[in-house]
Image (cartoon, rainbow, N blue to C red; front, side):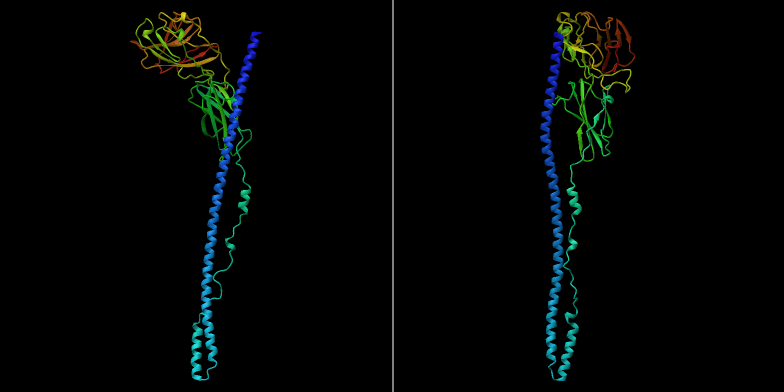
Length: 441
């Protein structure tokens, strides 16, 4: 009954946490709706203001053109008007002179007057002016037709955006510090130009949390519907992923986010199990001659400086599962108390997490002045005097940089020299279900 009740309580607690996360997501989405709405209204007003500005500039320019044409025609017609008025006055004066000449009785005077009239008529402006206006009153050549532009404006619509992609979970692959994410578009869209992939690390399973400690990382301008993130450090248990499609104009909605398991094995050291001559912090250990009796030899090492995981070390093909099933680890009070602290020549410290199933990987990176160290695995029944590699329940890689350098794999008090250079860091891969394996990275 107690176990059943505990399961019910655990289920309710998980559901409460899930609901709380969902409510936070809704609140965040509501806030973002208001923020984004304000932003798009501001953008819309800016676009219309730009359009109004362009129209005002065009109106001013075209109005100036009409005014210039008006001034030109008016100037031409006014000049013609002035010339015609002057010619009319001259012609009226000549007409009056000719009428008066008809009354001259003296033949000599009459002949003289007739000759003057003839000469003046020949040179009269009235007979030299064109009677056609140099400008017309027509201004239709400066009219505009806004039918097409009006139709374009009336046809203004919001930008078409691509549909949200769908991440194909079964085709995603998490392996060897790399993640391959695959997606598809629910409706064929030939106008998609590229995709944007976003990801972040997290230690929370399930849907991404709004108040997660990690920020989204962005990979832009992806031209295919698959992308492989390389050179990652699997130092969290999970990673969140989402993707959106973009055309030349705008970006669409994000896909539903997915959470992939990295199977990162993160642990610290159990200081209650360490030898007194070791100074232990959460993720590092060094020699401490003041902690107890022993040789005054300085040794430093760092554990789990970034971890990685493999679905299957010997089979790296894409047939591996996209997000391998969770493995079993236990982090609890250390399996041994202070009275079982390592002692004697067993300068050892245990990790604070035990492995119960699955595959796990971690790394050890020694400092440059480290002279000797071992890293490996042991069953829980390791005695306080036992040393790594010297019993049938321990396996280790041993590095010795004293007078005679050695690099060897040890188990059951047997050593196998490794004829390779000592690497900068040693990776430990443990396949619990198949038996322990040590591999160099």
